Image (tube, rainbow, N blue to C red):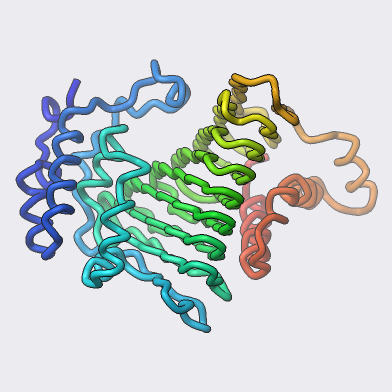
Length: 412
């Protein structure tokens, strides 16, 4: 049933979306894209649990249109101290549209990887995003330090939008830091990554949402020959965090590495979906998702690694590990392989769900630590293989400290 039958569309209606676009002075092509997205939003149903990626996440009681877009929401982009390399850009999408050269790149790629018609949350984002973020790494240039994006929500709905275009042999890292207060917040984000030949793109999400925030993120990366894309989600906060991370490995010898860490307590709900689509020869994908769950929290993982007939010499690994810290915590895991060629190097997957190793716990307690201190050490070690991939040492220390603070009061 379309949402129009149960909830007035208000700011989400096509006419309102076009009027808002024109008031912002956006180019005609973008105003038309927004209006098309608004029409898709009206026509598309909410996801149901009949769809496999939504099997364990029920949004039947959620109305997007009941959450008015936060009028003042704008992501804040901080460039590295050394500035942006020549020919590149890091700032708002809105500002990029004022530059003829950058506007041409944005028009070519915005919405090309993730069309608005793919789903209701995506359509809402495509019609409603404000400010946006555009990171453009010029050919052969490297950003000396990460670009930091601050995503702070107050109430209602926010629609973070990011486009990353890395030209051949470029290098860029983007750190996205999410935060909100205690108010009810709906966040629906879309990230598109275009990785040129031999480029390196790293994106890290530091998910520090407030306790009443529901976060729905769709990310898709496309890799050219020899490109390397790394994506990591560090989920500590939020009431519901559902991240869909996809890699389209088109170019020969390209790589996609996707990481996820979730630390749950109370009734937190984490849902990770990954799709790695091997199209080019000798492509490599590596997925690791880990969750440690206290209280009555829950983790879900559904991952598909697909190796097309054209992807001879591909190698893929998919791993999901879940550590249950309380008797009420729960995890569901469903890794899937779809291999359409017999010329693969290796394609494997694994999943575990279980309690803490009692022998390891006993060993630490025998060394003078109490049970909670021992669990903090074990969880930190459990996450280490994922966190070690993060090159930012300061962020790593912050995340480690956040894990310890949360475990200090978690119901174990």
